[in-house]
Image 1 (tube, one colour):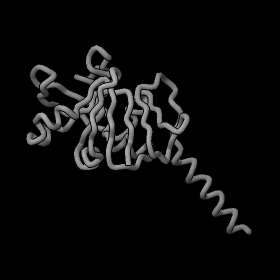
Image 2 (image 1 turned 60 degrees about the horizontal axis):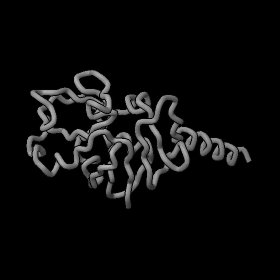
Image 3 (image 1 turned 90 degrees about the vertical axis):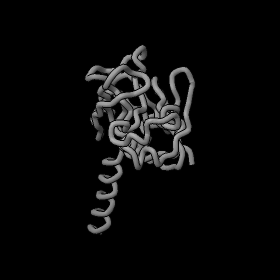
Image 4 (image 1 turned 135 degrees about the vertical axis):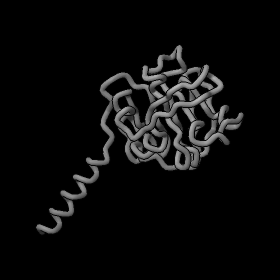
Length: 164
């Protein structure tokens, strides 16, 4: 009996450790689809503080949308998907104006793509392509600097749908 109690309490601890906390601030990103860690009505919703606690990176690079070298920082896309417990093969990344791009999940898994929350150290406003901007690691791999990846670089992101 003691063994069963130990297993039950272990499972309870494990499932609560995987739970995604509810956002305390304004929601800037909603992830939907097949998720193991939803926090609001079957979706995973994130505020800025939640996103900035995830594994991320800063990259200083040239882009077609900025002048000179610009520093972008934010959570790795794969860290967001992991936090939500997302599984699938395709991502539909949608902007505030409903523009969207279809992105293979391999771009998150194999490249250091980030959802930039900051540009040159400052939180990105909607006017500055925020609150979130999908940035490919142009600084790490010059072969990514082409129209294929430019078209996937959605800005003013509000939602990511994980598709099978």
